[in-house]
Image 1: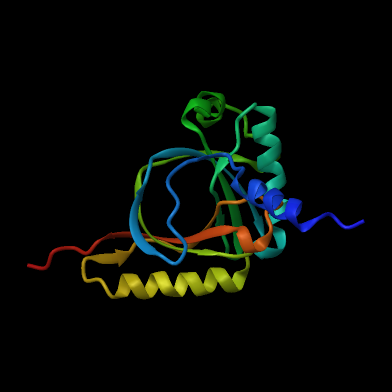
Image 2 (image 1 turned 180 degrees about the vertical axis):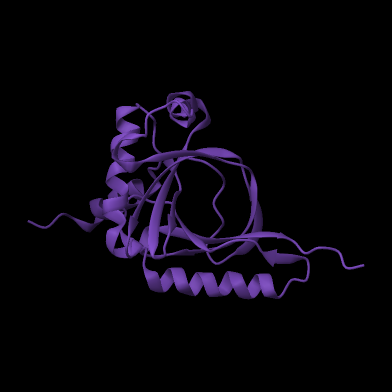
Length: 191
């Protein structure tokens, strides 16, 4: 017997709404905006090759790290595609003491190639959308946000674009939320 649709739709909506604590507010789908991300502690894994083919390979060491340290999962997950691809998890403020020791110079390397890093607050231009996490969506959103920055005389690009993914792999693609961020800085005043 097929699972009745009247039970399936509420189940999908409940699944989509379940998420970990957010590190910062999400940008609404279809919106491009300027926002300041908070300073934070993040854990990072990286590998050679395409992010969109190797995301599982990047996720596993991070997940094992937070499990071993008993650190709660937060959202979003950052993705940095490129020749060397990276995935980063934000560490919640209450959970930071559990990971902070791995920042010390005397600390042994974090297991499985996970690196713990502190990041200062930063200004980003963000464009958000809905749908599965794919290279095509990333590239389309990156073009939108770069065009938005180019249209503003008060901003300049200050870093590479990266993806921000808000939902777990178990959320159906049509319910997923994503953003593309481009670090920016104010355009210097002209004399």
